[in-house]
Image (cartoon, rainbow, N blue to C red; front, side, top):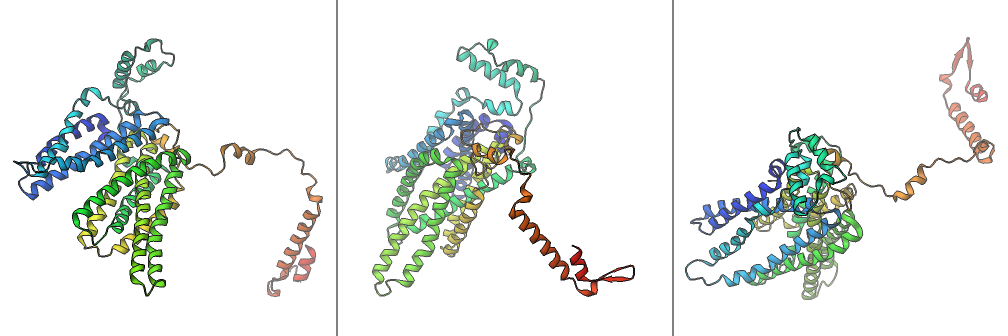
Amino acid sequence: MGVMADWFGRHPVLILSVLFMLVFGLSVAFSVNVTMFSTLRFFEGFCLAGLALSLFVLRIELCLPAWRFSMTMVASFLMVGGQLLMPGVAALCRNWPDRDDWQVLQIVIISPFVLMLPYVWIFPESLRWLLATQHYRRSKAMMLRIARKNQVDMTTEPSGVLAELEQELHKKPQRTCIVKMMSTRNLWKNIVVLCVNSLTGYGIHHCFARSMMDPEAQPTALCHADYYTMAGIAVATCLALCPAVGLMGRRGGLLTFMIITALASLLQLGLLNLIGKYSLRHDTVLRDSLNRRFSVAFSIIGMFSSHAVSTLSIFFCAEITPTVIRGGGLGLVLASAGFGMLTAPIMELHNQKGYFLHHVIFACCTLLCIICLLLLPEPRGQPLPESLADGETFTRQTLLHPGEQHLLLAKNDGDYSRVHDTPLHLSATGGATVAVATALAAVPASYALATGGEVIGNRAIANGV
C-alpha cells in the first residue's frame, strides 16, 4: 500500500481503502464458516493498513514543521480514545435478538467508515507529492483552487510560483520506486535502523505484557484488565511524549525511551533471578510476592517506554523519508512493527516454550538499537525532504554546538617562528637523535655495509648520525 501511495497518490489509496474496508468489513459479519471469516478478516486488515498509512502520510505532508508532531499526538489520542470506547460499544451490542453479538459489533464498528466517503470531494491530494513527482498540471489547478477559496490573486503574487510552473508543464510525471533507496549512502541505513527499532519496540511490548499477567486470574477478568491496562499505558505514553520530544528532540527522545526499555528488560530478566536465588530462601511466600511486585513494576515501565519507542520510530521515518518514497519507507517500518507483533501469537502457539529466550533476544536488540540510534539525524524544525538527494542531506549532527565549530577551524595568526629554540623542542630533537642511534646500533653486525671493500660497523654509522 505504501508503494501504491507513492505511485498513484495518497488520495486514491485513501478512498480505495475506505471503500474496500466497508465491503470486507460488512462481509465479515455475514461469514458462514471459519475459512470465509479468516479470508475476509485478512483483506479487512490489509485495507485498514492502507487507510492508516495514507492518513499518516497526508497528515505529515499537510502540516508545517512546528505542528507535525503535535498533530500526530492528537491523532494518537483520538485512536486511544476509540480503544477506550470499544468496551462500551461491545456492551451495548449484547443480547441482540436475531444475530450473534459479534456480528452486531462488527457492523457497528464498520458503519462509521461511511462518513469517510465524502473525502472524495472534501479531502485534497497532497500538493507536496504532486510537486515532488512533477504532476505540475494538477499542482497548478490545485493552487488556483486554493487561492480562489482564500480570495488570493495569484497573478500578482510576488514569488512567481505560477510562472515557474508554466515553464515546467511540458515535463512528464516521474515515479520513484522504494528499491532506489538502496543506491543512497545514508538514507537506507536510517530506514533500516528505524525498522529494527519498530520491530523491537512492538516485539518486546508483548514480553512485558505477558510478564504482567496473573496466571491465577480468571480469563474474562484477565482480558479486561489487560485491555484497559494497555489503553491506559498508551494514554500515559502520549502524554509523556509531548514534553519529552519538545525538550530533547526526536532522536533524543527515542534514545531516552529505548534506554528505559533496555533497563526495564535487563532488570526484569536479571534482578528477579538474583532475588530468588540469593535472598529470602526460607520465606518462599514473601519471595514470590516480592518477585511478583517487581515484575509488574518493570512490566509497566517497559510497556510504557516500548510503546513510546514504537510511536516515535514510525513518526521519525515519516519525517526523514523523501516525499517520492515516503509511503514505501513508512510501509517498511509498519511492516517491521507487524513482524514484532507477530511474535506474540507465535509464542502462544508454542505454549510459551522458549519465552525466556524470546525475551533475552529482544533485550539484546534494545542494546543494539541504542548504539544505532546515535547514527540518526535530528529532523525537528526542518522541512520535509522531497527527493532522494534531499534525503541524503539528513545526516547525523556533530556533537559540538554549531556556534563552537568555527573555533576549531579558525586560522590562527600567531608567530611560532622561534618554537625550535624552546627547551622542549631541543629536548625532543635530542631524544629523536638518541632514538635513531639506538635503533641503528641494534642492527646486527652481519648486516654491515660494504663500501669500497671496507666494512663500516654499526658504531661508525651511529657516530655519523
